[in-house]
Length: 78
Image 1: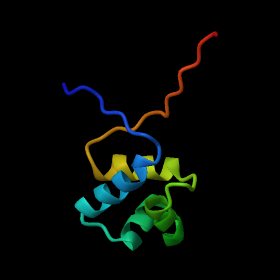
Image 2: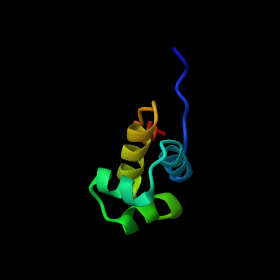
Image 3: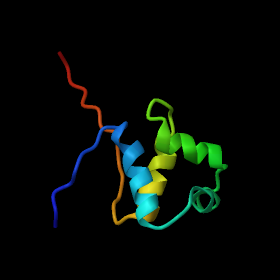
Image 4: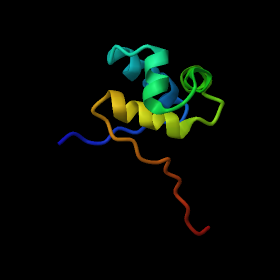
């Protein structure tokens, strides 16, 4: 079993696009499969500053062998 990889939220943007393209899906096909409109898919892939984390995670899980969980924030007493 491989050790888990960690990615920042912004890195999911490029990874979602890479996974969709590797799966041979067009933006229109992926939007239909994800149940969203094409502009939402566009923003999920091209706008890391916009909050489309759930859609990005769904895309990565659907088009790759990866499972996405997180984000992780560690809180502890001062």
